[in-house]
Structures are given as C-alpha cells and as structure tokens.
Length: 430
Ligand code: BGC
Image 1 (spheres, protein in one colour):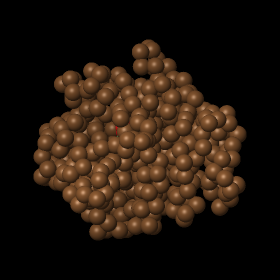
Image 2 (cartoon, protein in one colour):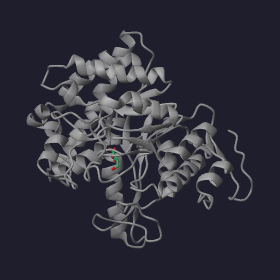
Image 3 (cartoon, rainbow, N blue to C red):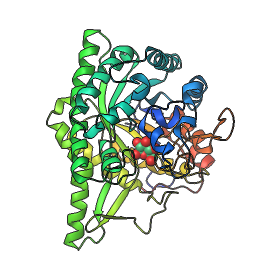
Image 4 (tube, rainbow, N blue to C red):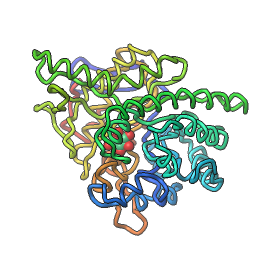
C-alpha cells in the first residue's frame, strides 16, 4: 500500500488501499420513527428513557430516506449500514407486512441508484412485542423465530444487499437487557444473560446458512455475512494486583469472547468480521470499570482511546484472519467539538493497523445522523449530520465533522491539507 509518510509524525499522510469503503452506520429503531410495536417504544412509554423522549418521533428516516441517502452521497459515502425493524416486518407472529418489505426495497433501491453499497443489520437491539411476550431472546423458541423472520427478509431483499449483519452487539444486548436492566426487558440475571448470548450465537449460525442458501438458490451475488461485535480493551486497573488482572480477564472472556467462541465452533459462519469499537476500560476487582485519568472523555464519560482501537484491530485480525469491517466507531459529542479530532485519531490508528498487515476493508462511522440514543434518548448526539429534533421536518445539517469525513473519503485517507483545514493543531498519536 502507498504510505506517503515522512519520518516525523508531523506532516504524515494516512492513505488507505484502493477500494477501501468510507461509510456510516445507523440502526432501524434509532432513526426510523413511526413504529409502536417494538420493545424500545414500550420501554420509552414506561418512562425508562433518560430524557423522556420516544423513538416513535425520532429522526423519521422512514419518511425522509431519499433526502438522507442524498446526504450520504453528499458525504461521499461508498457504502452505508442501515437496519431492519423486525416489529415492522413481522408485526404479529408469523404474519409479514408486505408493505413494510416493499418500503425497505425502495430504500435499498435508492441506495443502489446513489452508488451506496448497503450493509443491512437484521437485528439491532429492538424486538417485536409479540416476541417479547413469548420470552424474547431468553425464551426457548428464540432461534427458530429469528430464523423464520430472517428467511422472509432475505427472500424479499437479498438481491439488493451486499453485506448482511445478522446480529448487532450480542454481548452489549445481553448485558444491558438481561444483566444491568438498562434495555428492555430490564432483567438482572447472570443466567439469562448467558442464555441470551447463547441464543444469539445459535441464531447467527442458523441465519448464516439461511442467507447463503437463499442467495445460492436465487443465483444472486454471494453476500458477505457477519455480526457486528462490540469489542473493548480490558486492562487491570493496577497491573501488579492479581485480582485486578483476574477481573480484566473475566470481562474480556465474557464480554469480548464468549459469543465469538460459540460462533467459532462453526468457523465457516463468518465471511467477514464486524467490529464496533468505542473505548476501553481499566478493571478494578471484581468488575468495576474505570477510565484512564490521562485520557480525554466524551459527553458520556467514555475515554477517547484510539490506541485501544489499534489493539482491537490487530488482536482480532491475528486471531481470526477474517477481513475486518469496522461496523461502528464514533463518539457522543453534542456540539461537534471533539468529533473532528476523534475521527482523525481513529482513522490514523486504523491506518497503523492496516500498515501492520490487518486487512480492514471498510469503516462505518457511527452515526450517519444524530439519532435516538439507547439509554439517553434524543439528548445525546453521535451524528456526522445534525438533526434538529424540534423542527417539524427534523431538519438535517452536515456538521464540521461530516465535512471532514467527506474529505477523508474523497482523499481515501488523511492528507495534510485536510488536517490544516479542519484540526490544524492535530498530530497523530500513533
Ligand atoms: C450501538 C449503537 C449505539 C452506540 C452508542 C453501540 O453500542 O450499536 O446502537 O447507539 O453504541 O451508544
């Protein structure tokens, strides 16, 4: 690969291999608006969202998708990740809404027309209420029901999909929904948390076979299938304390690797390796998560730790050797003060991993637009595009970080011109 680097860190450029995908990501319930039959709607109605907002009135991508895809194009995306809402597609068990499927086709066709390759998540946290009533992901029928839904959506949409993500962040979902009680159904049980991770691993394996089976039968282009796995670095708070080392090992084992190990019993069920990276933790025994004092924090208090991104990319490249798609990376920053620098830091760290041999095929920044954040609601912003949530048409405006990201996409990396224009005092930490 071409690296137009000079000796000193200052003045270096970070250019990626030809064909690298510059993209952004979102999920269904966080941007679509308008759906009342999933569990996050119900959770919001119960008053469980920090700022009291409800995803039913968030962003309205469902309605404004043409304008939003035009904005993706304006940001010079070559790809984008969107999600499907199971509750819209199968509003009652076993009964599918053809209109909803046709609407997703219209969205995917619009992306195709705009030259944006779709990555589509089949499950990204939200669930139909009927599924919740049957026990949800802790119920005995979860895998079969998810497989049934997957079969229907792949038959309806597969010809338009380049990359399928079966399940987003299984460990985050299992921990937040079944251990910490922060997502619906708000349970607090270790046993159920493991049961849910197992079910999601088995659901992925089943979905993988279904997706390839359908694409093959229909003679559609072979898809790439993977999961979007949230991965963090866990280091001992005190390196010399064996208990902290033990705690960090536990967190790593059960949060990072438990799901993957179960999936990897069937190695052939991942064509690509999707990584969502946000931050890393220092673990104080038994499982207290601490930040690194020296590092800057985002609005949610998360450490901004690009070194951790490099470590995660290298670790999982060395472990599995699968092409990596960075399915999410981004930060919560309401006024877009940190994000430009955050993007430069993380793109530079990713460039270091690529230079060290990791095969990273694309980067999907989280998120395309400000959206409905899981615990906070509309009050916390991750977007490259600002959404005026109070405006009757939810007006969109590209942020400075969005402009910066467009330039990176056009240049296929970071050039000095970009640095000078957007963050003149930036120097790479890698
Ligand atoms: C999730 C997104 C979420 C983001 C920021 C990721 O873990 O996949 O849905 O909005 O983190 O919290």
